Length: 311
Length: 91
Image (tube, rainbow over all chains, first blue to last red; front, side, top):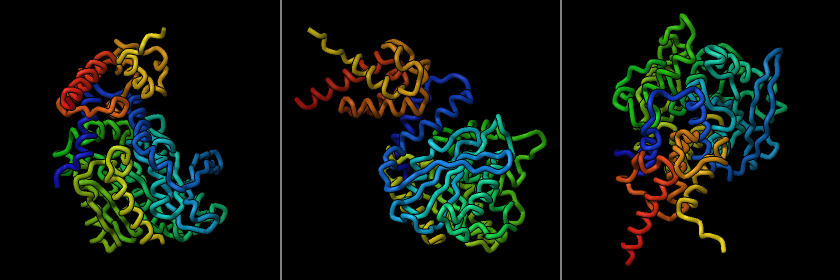
């Protein structure tokens, strides 16, 4: 299918917006770019979802979270998705992905708990993973107070957040209760990305390969191999006993092929894994409903997956 | 009598709206480079979309050129041309 015409228009605008830029984006600019994404999901604020901010604490740890609860649930116990935002491990926060989290809570009819994990390069690998792991554990421990069924808690994330969610599922296979689902949206699954889609769509498709390389440079630490499964979940040798997996990616996303490879390898390992490649779409389309009308359809499909696995 | 705001003034209002979170929002002038005023590529996307809405125009792909979005004055020039083309098409 050709590129969706609204997505094409958006890419055209991004190209002009980036035009005339000399040199590389600064860290501040990369962060502001991710923050600005929120304005393209502003329409999701109309969803019937209540939010509340809280802080998870354990010893020296203090992790900010935002809880999204569909109004239809009222006080009823529900499944939940613990959500890790994208932004190349170095940008994004509770606000940048607020609209997307509202949409997921509404479409999936579950609570979504977004985690404000520490960012690189101030906090390099494995700070983000440690925060996500601690947040998940504390949420499970506190499930009753959060009106969440501890046996139906899944993890989810987009882009680099999908990388954190996938890595967490691999490292937490022994914990009980088992993670009930992993929902990966256009995830980064191979830090160095050597797939055909990374090469064919390296420039001009919203997320640039040269930016991907910079993300990883800021995130990595001395001695960490890019093939380490903790940063490249696709490179893990054992993919058995992972939670039911739903992956949504886009035909024109440079990260498309690594998602497909991961879904294939998970299925071979006996995991209930399903892949949805959204035709004509680009990276992060589900968070761009203000410019790409198809986002609404994509979000409904994602919500149906949440309901099917956690419902 | 108050002066009628010029097209450039009206474009500046749209620019300031998009720059709302920037310290430059109060000081940005018609000839200031928007990128130097803190407009990111995403901000530029928002500016292009907001301009279409504010002036009820469609910016054709061939006009999606960085020069047209360099500063408020250049953008006002583009808007003026597109508005007059629209008028001609209607007539």
